[in-house]
Amino acid sequence: MSHVFINGQWCQPEEAVVSVFDRGFLFADGVYEVVPFYTGYPLLFDDHYERLERSLAQVGIDNPYQREEWLSICQTLAESTPEANGIVYIQVTRGAEYPRNHLPEGELTPTVMATASPWVPPVETPDPVHVEPFEDIRWLRCDIKSISLLGNIMLKQEAKKRGAFEPLLHRNGRVTEGASCNYFMVKDGCLYTPPNDELILGGITREWILELAESAGIEVKETAFSLDELMQADECFLSSSTREVQPVGTIGSTTINNGSIGPITQQLAELFRNRRPHIVQE
Ligand code: PLP
Image (cartoon, rainbow, N blue to C red; front, side):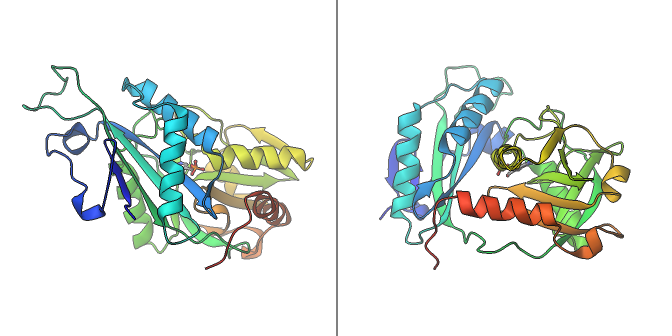
C-alpha cells in the first residue's frame, strides 16, 4: 500500500518528490499539521482541520481541499499504515516557481504532502521529565503552525545538550510554551496555562485538557505566569498530540512536587486516556 500523498497522487516514499524551486524548500513558505490516530481513528480531526485552515488563511495560501477531502486523506493514510496507532503529517506550501523571488510573480498551485508514521500512545502516565528554561528566540507569530521551525530546532538542540526532555520557553521571564508542546502548572488546586495568543501555538491537546479539567470541576485559568511562579508550582506538565499529558519533575535545578506525578496531573492524564479512542496495543 502507498504511504505518501503528494499533490493528489499516492506513491511510495522514494517516489515522493517536489521541485527544488518549491517555496517550502527555498523559504519555509508553508504550514503543517499533525493529526494523531488511534486504531485508525483520527483524534479531534475537526480541531486539527480548523487549525490547518486558520494557518493557511493567516499566511495567505488557499486551502486546496475541503474538509471531507482532508479527512479522506487522513483516513486512507491511517488505514494503509501497518501499525494501528500513529500520526498523519500534512504539509502545504505556497508552491514552486522559477526563478526564485521573495514574492511570487505568478499564480501558484500549493504543494500538498501527507504521510503517516507509527507512534505508540502511552498506556500509563509517563515518568516525570526534566526541562530546561530558555529565552524564547522564535518569531512573534507562534500561533501559526509554520514549517519554519529553525528556532524550535535550535532550542531543542540546546535543551538536549543539557540533558532535558524539552526546552521551557519564556519571553523576559514570561512562560510561553515548549519547542513542540504547551505547558501547564497547578497551584493551590487551580490549573494554569499561558493564554492562547500569538506567542504560542494553540495546541489541540491543550484545548482538550482544559475541557477535561473543567468537566472534572477543576478550576482553570488561561493567564500569563512567570518562570519564577512556575518554579513555585505544586505540579507542572506539558502536552502535545504525541505526548498527551507528560509530567515535569524538574525545571532547571528546581524540583517540582518532589519529582513525582502530582494528583491533578495524574487525574488529567487518566481522563485523557479514558476519553481517547480505545487503542490496540502492538
Ligand atoms: N506548541 C508547539 C510549538 C508545537 O509544535 C506543538 C505541537 O507540535 C504544540 C504546542 C502542541 O500542539 P498539539 O497539542 O496540537 O499537538
